[in-house]
Amino acid sequence: MDIAKAKTQEVRAHLLKALDRSRPAPTPEALLIRSLQQAALPLNRSQLQQELGYLEAKGLLHHHEALWWLLPYGVDILEHSIEPTAGIPQPNGWGPNELLHRKEVRSRILTALYYARPHGIGNSILWRALDDSDLPVTETELARETHYLSGKELVELSGDLSHGWHAKLTAEGIDLMEYATEPPPGIERIEKYWEG
Image 1 (cartoon, rainbow, N blue to C red):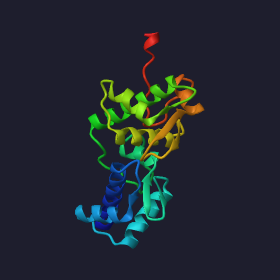
Image 2 (tube, helix red, strand yellow):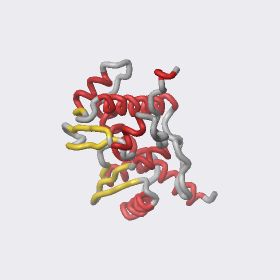
Image 3 (cartoon, rainbow, N blue to C red):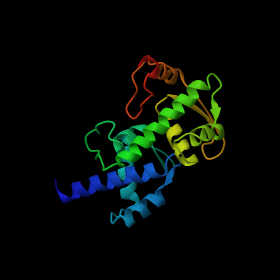
């Protein structure tokens, strides 16, 4: 692999990780440029937009004006839940403890929303339910993972993720929790303890 191609892959991997750290909030281009400079990967704005546009065309990102979001497909690549497509690096994602924690949080969100059917539940009550369990979770983690589940079309969100929001399971989420469908990459559901 030539040096230019290796640097391009390193830039793309860094961008994915930087966008993941700010989920579910969008990341301004200026912060991405600064993050790349701190990692000794300086790009000008035009080069950054070219790389972000490439990642968006591959279905990993979404943008509005100069704000960028990492989509669930990009998270799945970072978490090594799926194999990346050509041209996309599979960066050294997160450690095994972080991955287990994320998947456990997602599983508990789905379970809480399943039992809150048909009305769903607000973020503060959902956070309390998870925080009171043996799985401490921050409000940011809760919003990040609920947004991820929404991107997988398992959860319907209403409201503003930076303030008060409300979540409920979609029909796909209910099917998943009732073992009618297989979980998509990045999702684990509770074991059928009642059949063991």
